[in-house]
Length: 213
Image (cartoon, rainbow, N blue to C red; front, side, top):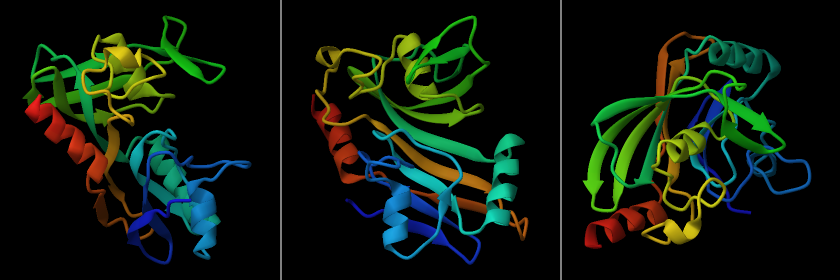
């Protein structure tokens, strides 16, 4: 199991940098929760990242902190920013994907029967056949960024669940999505807290490959 990196920790909570390929929570498979337990920490993730996504995960170290953090998430007072590399080129520098998402048996899709979902994006760099984006989630539906991006015609590089790998111009070995920053008021002190997870080496390598293509 690949160990997570602790990006922030105090007596009440921590923010871990989850590696790609590791579940956030899982009873029968290696997970971030298991990895934290191996460090002697009874930490509970307050939200989840897909197995294929790396980056910031907020974890509570006690029950009361977990409850307070969950309230912050419900009130949408937690700002989550993602780095992504998508196929093609969005037509505008800043935009939004606003389409309802329906979750069915481990799969999600855009459907009028789904729950409201809103994703904001900003173009960081245009790299030929792919585009580097900064993405901010307003809602938190299952696979939201992946579903919205594919629905908009700009599937993530490395996507295999919502797009065909053969169309990926970089033939990426992993999903090009990383939870880069998380920001929220500390649940006890109310002081603003912002934590950033550096882009992992394999994603930096994808950017270099795109620049050279």
